[in-house]
Amino acid sequence: MRLIDSHTHIFAEEFDYDRSEAIQRAKDAGVVAMVMPNINSQSVDSLLSVAQQYPDYCFPCMGVHPTSVKNNFDDELASVQSWFAKAKFYAVGEIGIDLYWDKTFVEQQKEVFRQQLKMAKKFRLPVIIHARNSFHEIFKIVDQENDEDLGGVFHSFSGSLTDYEHIASYGKFLVGIGGVVTYKNGGVDKVVQHINLANVILETDSPYLSPVPQRGKRNESANLVYIASRIAEIKGISVQEVASVTTANATKLFSLSNL
Image (cartoon, rainbow, N blue to C red; front, side):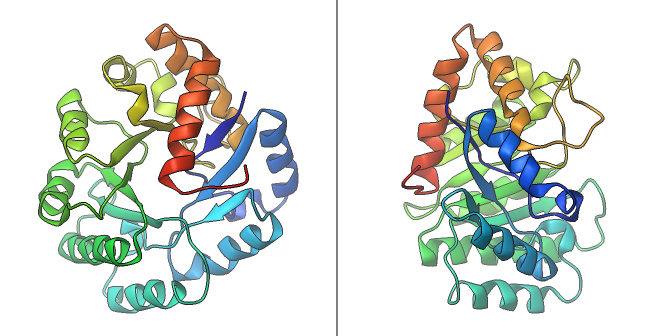
């Protein structure tokens, strides 16, 4: 079984004491690649260090996470823009709007999100969208920016079936399903029943959102097997089919090669 973790922060400090062991556990579990979305200008050194240490396994992305958008957002955008000329990245991300933690900079978040969508179209890269308590605001902007050059994934999807249908209508967007699908009251399992597997990629969002039975512990990519198993159970298909289809989806979306 071959799996791709389409969203992990394996470069985060939570893995500083056992990163190589966590990566080996992922490999042992069948994970053949990790996609790493950036957070902000302060995380780039760690991101690129891990990417250089594990070439052809850890694939870096470049963007500004919405919770990192403050009054200095112009500086963060300039940093993102500059990095595309200096290194290879596989997506623009993690970008989006987060209205769960803090709404102080919501207008700045909207502007930064829009500008990064434009970057993605310019560089012909997919986007990794963080949409927490913000589907309405996200959709309003993507509705305006969507064209044949825009595609990507709504990561850690936890929306309604109506939200999923809106995403599917864009044509080139997938949904990332993570640990929440294993939660008894998460609600994602009810929607996954109706989602076409051709529109799904798997993710952990490690070190966050550990799936059952690891909930409450630090998440890591090896736990992707629990997410794949739960989706297989919900849809009444084999884990091998879930792995095969979602791995092909992620490989195509992020233009991964030599896996």
